[in-house]
Length: 234
Image 1 (cartoon, rainbow, N blue to C red):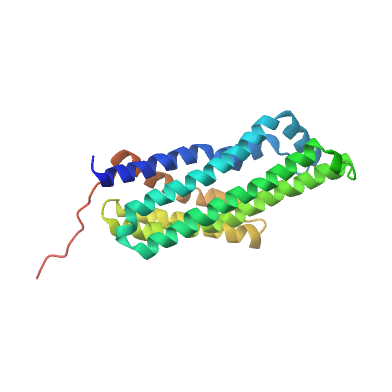
Image 2 (image 1 turned 90 degrees about the vertical axis):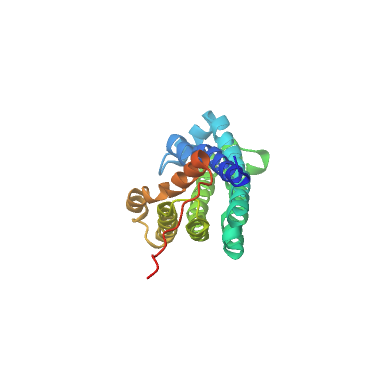
């Protein structure tokens, strides 16, 4: 196995580990604990399943940390194809999203404090505390919608780099570009068109598998060189 292969497989392995944890807070906990339009029921679920909710916070911290190492591994792998693009990839894909993951955990922590209660919250009755907890959970969701812009933007330089590198099928580069555009559209629609996100999520889901396909390719095949087609000389 070459050094390039090891870099590719490391990036793929880290990404797969991250993708196994990310759905815990992003999908599973909201669908299991949160009751739309009913802060009291949501609060009751959070109290009964407090350990699960806390593990969701830990999961976000894990994803934010692992994300940095994933993108740095990709930088080491692809920087020879364009250092400026690779630097943009690190900023858009690691530095800013990881910071958002860590800061967004504070919204969950605030919601949990409000649900559990504390002496300094005696000025609020139970209904008010539950409503405030629902507000912080909503803020968490809105921050995720904003973060989708970065989830999409970092895939643009990644797609260009993989197109140039010569050891990833170019169909995956195109898929990554479409994946990035899907995230950007969803982020904009999440704020500009209140009724669009659910429909867009269904439409964009196949495009958003581009990242998974790319990382699985790196994990399984490593940095396999592909000869570029050349136009025959006249």
